[in-house]
Image (cartoon, rainbow, N blue to C red; front, side):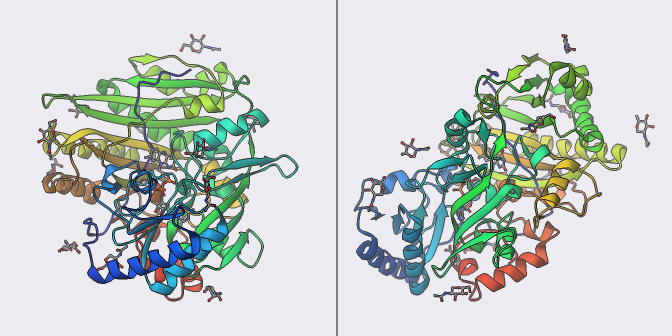
Length: 511
Ligand SMILES: Cc1cc2nc3c(=O)[nH]c(=O)nc-3n(C[C@H](O)[C@H](O)[C@H](O)COP(=O)(O)OP(=O)(O)OC[C@H]3O[C@@H](n4cnc5c(N)ncnc54)[C@H](O)[C@@H]3O)c2cc1C
Ligand SMILES: *[C@@H]1O[C@H](CO)[C@@H](O)[C@H](O)[C@H]1NC(C)=O
Ligand SMILES: *[C@@H]1O[C@H](CO)[C@@H](O)[C@H](O)[C@H]1NC(C)=O
Ligand SMILES: *[C@@H]1O[C@H](CO)[C@@H](O)[C@H](O)[C@H]1NC(C)=O
Ligand SMILES: *[C@@H]1O[C@H](CO)[C@@H](O)[C@H](O)[C@H]1NC(C)=O
Ligand SMILES: *[C@@H]1O[C@H](CO)[C@@H](O)[C@H](O)[C@H]1NC(C)=O
Ligand SMILES: *[C@@H]1O[C@H](CO)[C@@H](O)[C@H](O)[C@H]1NC(C)=O
Ligand SMILES: *[C@@H]1O[C@H](CO)[C@@H](O)[C@H](O)[C@H]1NC(C)=O
Ligand SMILES: *[C@@H]1O[C@H](CO)[C@@H](O)[C@H](O)[C@H]1NC(C)=O
Ligand SMILES: *[C@@H]1O[C@H](CO)[C@@H](O)[C@H](O)[C@H]1NC(C)=O
Ligand SMILES: *[C@@H]1O[C@H](CO)[C@@H](O)[C@H](O)[C@H]1NC(C)=O
Ligand SMILES: *[C@@H]1O[C@H](CO)[C@@H](O)[C@H](O)[C@H]1NC(C)=O
């Protein structure tokens, strides 16, 4: 097994508009509308499936399931929570929500870093806790996922068949990852996670169910759901390609976690730029996280964690990662790994409030881009030194997720997605700046928000590259960075002509 000491995260940034991070204030009219919708839902679906704060034992489980505590019951109290058992239940819920004009939200694995996206005040929350099955169809070589499953559970159930979906790098994350594209350890070979869709059952905003595939009449919706987030409908079933990842005892990957000291930071950042510029081998997989932790007194500790793995032999690993291996590191124990070992290599604490922000950097031209990687880190250090303090913050991260040219190409080959730039423009890193607050902090303090905003406004990003929706700030105009932005606007207007979703739920800006 890989050492489990590290916190690692994977994410990105954008140039971002000035937006408003405060969650919606309570509106008396919305409260009445939601209460009407909830009592109708209790009549049609029953009081065990539709629970209010006073009525049901699962309400508080649903209201406190979110990973970021900024989304828990202390901050958001949905008027009721619907726990559907089937697609039909979701259709019933959306019809009632739509007809009443109620606010609503959807929660799957709960790992959104956006405050207010997976929960709602004065509205209906649809929680997928009870729809969490997975299965493998050997004949079609496909995997079916219900939205409530988590990637580690899916991969451990499916490992007996030697297959896995292209999903998250951390076991506890959920299927909402797919709707933001999704970056996996399998992505260099297979594309963004969403590039591996086969078919999607989608409940449109008015409750109508459609099944979308790459070549049926809903192919536009199918493509929009590869990155458009929660705006296009509620996916109640994902059928995705199965990838041959091997069983537990077939340890096909070699590598693990390399921990570097801060004195290696400049060399490591240069190695990241070289990697994304030069690497064309989809078997070489990299994920890098710089972590700053506050000690009890206001001193900080910086650690640089790189997951370096190769689908193949130790000799090929040594060759692919030669530059990384030449940089002085503090600890490493590279070894043969199964796919599930990879998902368990890193764990993340929960029970803390967290915010994300994104940028994106290419590796072209290589020397100029190294300067931008260094500048990104300099701005990060300016934040940790001047805005953050041990009375507010548990830790911060600067995280680099490579999107190599082979990943972009795989997306084109599998039917294209709305995210990626044209083929031939080179690979890039999606960059995440994450701030995780102490457990007693329920609202991010203004001065810290100002420092975070300064990073968002100042961090360099390569023009033309997409930001990563899964790891951005709620106010960043992520969809506007996509090559398929105009396409998304057209598809949204077609499937939600009254703009109900944009007006009644939080999600990506720009539609
Ligand atoms: C510790 C950690 C590790 C991560 N690692 C990765 C990683 O390796 N790769 C990566 O790509 N991302 C990663 N992420 C980001 C992650 O993909 C996003 O946070 C993603 O939104 C989480 O999905 P979820 O189902 O867990 O979250 P949720 O908060 O439940 O959902 C996220 C969003 O999608 C919407 N949504 C969810 N399900 C549906 C549905 N069925 N229909 C319509 N809308 C829906 C929700 O309303 C919400 O807006 C990580 C995040 C964390 C916190
Ligand atoms: C943000 O929204 C809140 C509540 O809707 C409002 O009071 C506040 O003025 C807004 N702030 C900005 C900067 O627009
Ligand atoms: C929904 O499924 C859960 C879990 O399987 C079960 O406990 C519950 O009784 C079901 N609810 C309804 C209303 O069918
Ligand atoms: C589904 O959720 C239930 C209740 O939380 C849990 O016991 C079960 O293990 C989950 N199943 C899967 C496949 O994750
Ligand atoms: C690992 O590499 C082998 C040989 O190049 C390839 O056939 C296989 O598909 C790869 N597996 C994954 C999961 O990428
Ligand atoms: C970490 O390294 C960077 C770049 O060399 C430097 O600017 C910064 O001061 C260092 N931080 C600490 C705490 O040593
Ligand atoms: C890989 O490199 C390590 C040292 O970095 C060395 O100990 C090991 O023998 C090398 N393995 C192979 C197969 O070359
Ligand atoms: C990039 O920088 C390296 C090291 O400073 C230098 O050797 C190389 O010539 C530069 N390459 C270009 C294209 O400028
Ligand atoms: C949170 O706890 C820290 C001590 O751990 C304290 O300094 C700080 O003031 C507390 N913050 C809030 C908002 O209560
Ligand atoms: C550090 O951040 C502050 C706060 O926004 C900003 O005013 C200052 O210019 C930054 N310093 C540098 C060197 O980037
Ligand atoms: C629901 O919306 C879709 C897309 O706008 C539309 O085609 C369909 O007719 C609507 N269904 C109902 C029952 O209104
Ligand atoms: C949030 O507030 C805005 C402006 O008041 C409103 O248009 C929107 O419907 C509200 N959304 C939610 C989910 O409460």
